[in-house]
Every structure is written in C-alpha cells, then in structure tokens.
Length: 118
Image 1 (cartoon, helix red, strand yellow):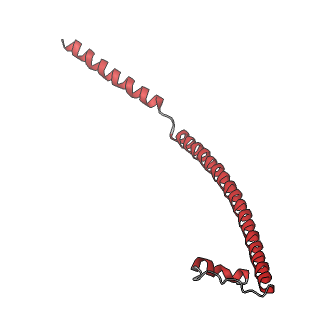
Image 2 (cartoon, helix red, strand yellow):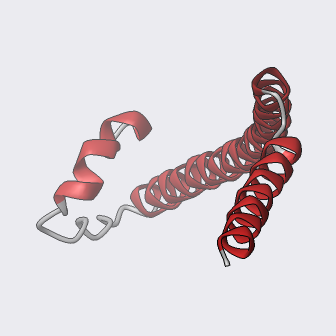
Image 3 (cartoon, helix red, strand yellow):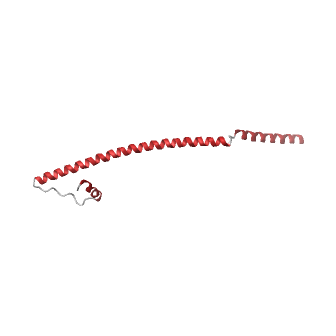
C-alpha cells in the first residue's frame, strides 16, 4: 500500500512538473514581448498619423470652399450696394426723395455697414 501511495505521489509531482514545463515553454521571452508591443504601437501611430493627415486635408478643402463662398458673398453684397446706390441716384435725379432705410437698423447689420460705406 505504501508503494502505491508513493507511486501516486511521484505521478502527481510528475504531472505538476509537466504542466509547469508546458506553461513555461509557451511563454515568450520578455524581450520578444516588448518588441511585439513596440511594433504594435508603431503600427497604431502610423495609422493615427494617416488619419490625421486625411483629416487635415479635409479641413483644408473645407476652408477653401468657405473662402470661395465668402468671396462670392462679398462680391454679391458689393454688387447689391452699387445697385442700390445707382437706384438712389436715379431717384434723386428725378427730383424725388428715396425712402429712408428701415429703422432701427439691427445690431448684426450695423457693425458691417461701415465696410460698404453706409
């Protein structure tokens, strides 16, 4: 009976030793794990860099469209101011008085009137 118990103990120790050996054998060396982490980080940083470049390009395109729109609006407003001035001049040549602008002038409009000479 003692022999059977000792054989069982030896088998248990052998099984535990085998499990430990398998676990240790499957682990990667610490240096390799660090290299893998560095590679992963570099890949993610490159992906983030590409995303940021794409976003910057999109913002530049949006900015260019905004500049075009503002330029077109500026041209339209200057055209309208010129047209209104010519109408006022025509009315005054006809010895009439043009109607006064609507009062009160809104604050949002008033701060821009100095740019168009009114």
